[in-house]
Length: 591
Image 1: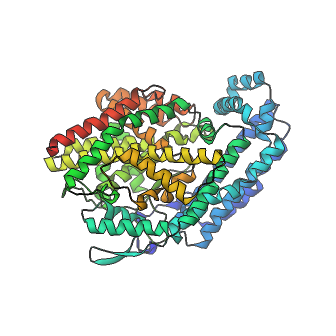
Image 2: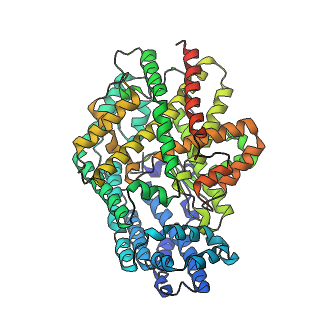
Image 3: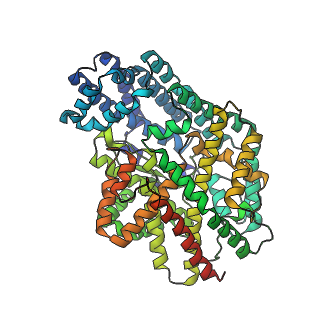
């Protein structure tokens, strides 16, 4: 489908950021002229000057955020439009120029006396910047000299290329063939692959699976080289900033204790027997002699999936999120009415779904909606992101508005869990209840177990490069295959296609991001349970978290919502929830 064929009400209203491309170009020129921060170099020891630097930086950040989001969204509407590719590239160059211009900041701040920095933290004038100053104190051992910082900052545009190359392959260059589906020839897009994989037609699932992975394996050498380059970049940056490993750098930059990561891996590995049991149940219920990975998404209960058009799906999501209160529901309605959402899959549009936003403008959500249960949950998920952004921006100054990646998946997954619990309670017949229990199991499998497996893969890949071992298609596929066998057990066939699955995961180009999906769903399951059992008190605590932005470290923010990831309790609850849901499902299915 061409974008011009989509009804206006299903397109996001990007004009709320800039009314025209010409306005964007004018603002871009303003941003270029505003890069005059070198005038502050050598003067940050004066508190008045430092405060002026922070305020000027805030204004610049607000402008460049709008420029960047607009360029990103226009680019993702159709990656084939060269004009917006150029916009997107210009933003990258602008960020590099800005980073180079302020390269003096970290080294200069690191030289300041500790007592002086603590005094600034206590100074009410710096209330908007107290958390930034606390982090500056903690970063002191990892700050380079000014010439070194300037040199490293100049690599930003180059180092972003690995992700850009993969995205270009994934969105435009991937040789995805046509497939016959429901009596018509159609391109096997990312969205269509998901639809077919969730269908009950096993022959089509197998065909789509082989064609889809065939496209990736045909480019496996190029993708391997791109990913190897990305990991080498991560290792370089970790060594340059004096960290012992890429993982240490990633955790430190988000102020997350290693204990949280270790708690996750320990709990998930302890819970793997339940996952093996579920895979074995799936094989038995489907009645197959051999179970393949293209059989892992088809419903185990036929004829019960909810197939709603987008309008009905959105109304259903609003209804399902009633436990969060009428104000939350009204904001969801506002997002629909004011066109925060881009709905339809179109030629050249970025695949998948995401939420984005810029300070001072409402958030946005990109979808590629299909009438499936999975996509109903995607609506709830992305609007969870969007309203998290809305509340953080509303309640925090720009310097504290951007929440870290570590908590980014919490609000979205709370929405999913609450919606699923609503659907289970709303189910009028046994078949739908069976289907929803199966869906919940698959949701936990995909978001908790699978993402933790991804986390182990990227940790091992980075460790190999840290040991000066090269990454090849052979050792990467072997690493992934070994993890797959440990996670999924013996009830499923581990073929070559699935050993190459790592090659299609875009999040691997943002190292140590994927484990946050796992901690996100674990946190969300705990928060949702508390909201449903404790009511208004839990909702109020949850909204404190949603409004927190980056006003403190993410683990402390989650404690506001009643979840302490420094203990094993939340992780144990999640594993027990999966096992209990599996037991309930087995009873209903007569296993």
